[in-house]
Length: 175
Image (cartoon, rainbow, N blue to C red; front, side, top):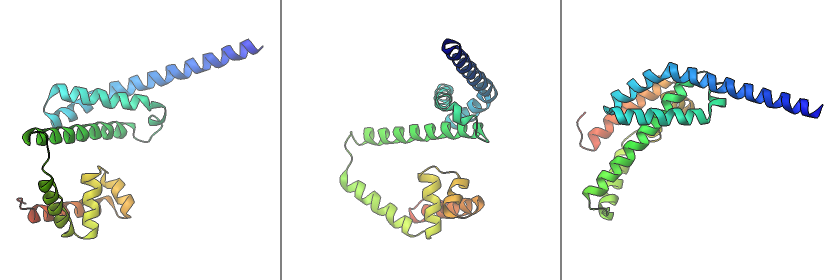
């Protein structure tokens, strides 16, 4: 009797794992081409786009039990891919700066840069500063930032754009 119950439990677990795998395979087939196209347009490099795409699918697969229950699993996939792209881009930018400087950052230059950024951010309204930091620095979507700030996503986008424009003017860029 116990052996039969264990066998039934094992069969149920195998069926659930098969269903999980099959649903992920369908998801992969559905989203593969679109995600690759989006990443290729962003990176302009086929190999980098493929690498980012596969990394994103791997991360989604690791959480597929929860992700497939979401309202928009594809949104989670794209968000994961974009976060990986931003992280890679930041690492490459840091490596370039270190390479140009000979590997050692100049402490005085860092203080001056930080001071310039602090002054530029101080020129923004509190709401603009919050919108810029949440969306551009921390990578939140306008919907997520709007939820955190208690405003509509459209308001976050407007605040962030006005903040970016002010930062460009303050820091000597072109608007």
